[in-house]
Image (cartoon, rainbow, N blue to C red; front, top):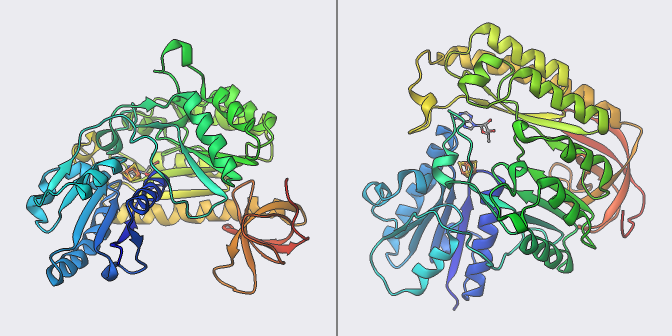
Length: 440
Ligand code: 5AD
Ligand code: SF4
């Protein structure tokens, strides 16, 4: 019988994509995927370290792997991703039952380990070039990722990512277009460009191959069969007018921009080393509203950054009121090892962080619900993703604005349908569909 593997993924879309590549690679080595962890011969974790809660959630899972390994010592336990990178060789001291550990994106190292006859624990933590052309097993055949760069040259004082993913390296544009064409040929309709800072793409490429992020978007847009393009995440400091205009000009580029704010206070933004201030951020928003008035804007916000006063926090609330985000991911500041902010003076007491978080969520949700009402009465193009999670008689999909929609109708996953929206909450839309059509 074939050996079986099980992967648990934590963290961002980059990790989701890396896990798809792990699945593809293991399948090509003759492994099969087990639906339960206890049925697997190779137990893998793709980890995140962005906040303390991510660490602790993962460590609870690791306890189960330890138990399974003690039941059957021939099992292999592997830990990849950002947490592994951030603790490196300590992994083996703290968790001696782990057989192999590797940094983010270093999936080919896992193959090397499984194909070797090494019996001792191995760690692979060098930052290197891309792991290249690994086969991918996509979760949905009509949606694909295109990793355009790895690493990050920013020095945000709260963030562990520059130390886990290394310096920024952009991939060759021609290689990316070939990959986009291959995805389209393989049935992908919606592609998401991935990078830690997508809109600084290309800056370190050799001159004869250097293109900007906006040019890359245009090249992907021209690929036959790609009907929707998204990207994540851009940095407000690098959000140029050409990228914003592209949302108006390129038919496949969706009306959706995730623009991480982090804080509405210029003083806090400075301590965060974000290199923009509130005014410049609001200029970007104004430019988006000018060129693409209906664009959905979402964001990330941190509350309780060291030194954040009540007045600073109120400025964040003001920005939330002004922008009226379509949605926001909200985080309580979490000190991360070896980051500048972890040891800054004036850490905000926990109860204050919690109280601010509650007020922030109230504002975010209220504005998002108000904003979502603009869709009621409209007919929106929805890419069907499956059945509704809450009501199995309904279907679920996403609009170009990246809003989840539950709707009545008959369609297959991967088809485009027009849905007439009849109600909206801060998170989801509901409606009724017309019959599917083949292309938007
Ligand atoms: N504490 C809280 N939130 C953080 N983020 C990144 N690092 C931290 C931290 N130390 C948030 C940021 C980022 C998102 C992915 O996670 O808002 O945009
Ligand atoms: Fe987590 Fe950040 Fe690493 Fe993604 S890049 S897995 S969010 S620590």
